Image (cartoon, rainbow, N blue to C red; front, top):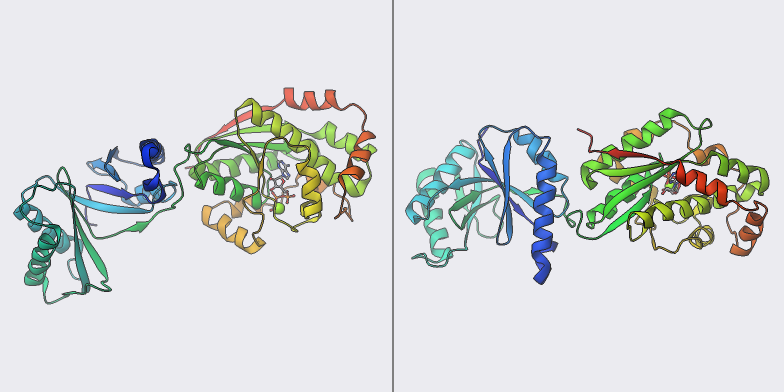
Length: 397
Ligand code: ATP
Ligand code: MG
């Protein structure tokens, strides 16, 4: 395969952040470094005006690097780049011709040359340089290359900065914003399909995520817990490391099961989950909670039900999937790689204690009345909080 020297990284939205732009660029550099850490090779990541570069020394795992970069939010395009360490225009033009010859030794295609100069004191303008290079390419490879300025098969780019950067391929990145630029949120992570997708979608907007999982041993197994840890690790390939809080919910759940109407179990359980999730969120300076809820998906997710669960929270609850159809959520979970794990058939604490005919139109009044039957729950809640198990979930390799 053709041996590239570096990647030129184009970012989209972070380009418009005005005075704070450097914060976004620095976060992107950090995330790129993290993503490349497990990839074989020696990478140096640095900024230049409007761009981030990844320079490689010696051999490296090209496919692994591209895959890792495709999971970094904030990147619009990943361009494998060939560097010519010169500012001499004749050398740069030759460099482009050599690059095309080596990267595409046999292909037939139409092209357009695009030149960008950061360095304005060159003797020619960008269009003049581009025209020269186009002519040279036709002279050398005219039997298989033709110019098409409207809809070329390939754009051939030369960016002249501190030296020449040549590229002819743009691999689509994950877009969004670099993780760490938008505060932190606590995601309620179950073993289902939806919540890992919700966590990754928040990360796509730059939010760092932590997670909380409620289990009910011995009603739920260690395998169910391991499944959630695995989901956190797979999601972490996009979100970065996830601090996962594992809360023993058994006694709270049994109390609710014993004392409250069974058709209201899920709602009341969800309210306790949200309260406890909020405790950990505030403790770790999270600015909101995140769930994988979607209107109407199940009884506990009608707008009536969502109202009653929301009522216990003081932090905003972000529900990135709220208007998504199930199939659209599945499509994303397949893309991010969580689907196969999500559908493993281990029991969830909600499904064990679930009623046959749960309420779909609860009122807050009715739910609060039922909850009063629980008496003082402070001790159970405090015990659940005090016995939390924390697992730091690093990205799965
Ligand atoms: P599914 O894909 O089966 O719908 P789900 O994760 O969405 O899975 P729901 O029962 O629909 O499960 O729960 C709605 C939301 O409530 C979840 O997306 C998640 O944010 C939160 N949640 C449910 N159960 C738990 C749990 N055991 N621990 C943490 N959060 C939970
Ligand atoms: Mg769901």
